[in-house]
Length: 241
Image (cartoon, rainbow, N blue to C red; front, top):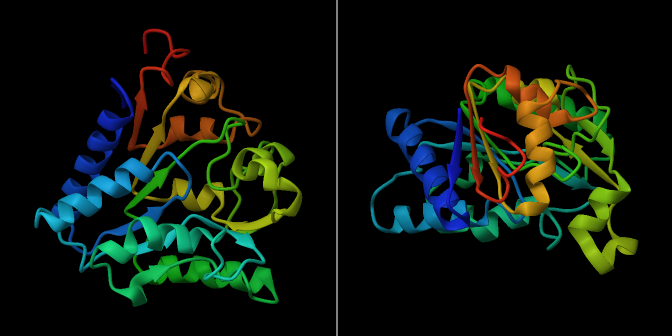
């Protein structure tokens, strides 16, 4: 299902309402969390709803989608630090149930296998929230990623590094631990968020074009329970869908 919002604020409201509805139905929801600019409005609204007493996250377990490698969790570039700063530190998700890939582990393959096992032990992902990169990446699954990929160490595309770090790109991490596409697709439900005219071409290709590893997000067309919430600018290349 695709929902087109008038703008970013409405997009964030729709997404927050969906997340809260799922938590109310399943108090022990297992939630996949993204970093990046797009979910900031969602996180802000979830915090406000929690402070208003309208949602309780005390039974929720979270798994971050990805993490720069090798970046410690206290590093301000860390995605774990990002999700703590913008969401987790302001709600009542228990600290021992807020998970992120172990991005300082000396053996990344072991860390990734352990992360997959943690997800299984938690009962599997109920809802994964995704942003989308301008090249179609979801998590850090860059173009060309196999659809059967699992959590692993990945090399970041130069375009992704430039978009994420701007002028600081020369000193940015060039690798990350990321949930694989198969890991994401095994979630019971996926919530995809996209905002802004710069995302319009890739949103059109991802949701309306052929399913291909060259557009990683295109595989979401095959998910049995996908909700894509996009604003009007991001929906501009979708035609009448």
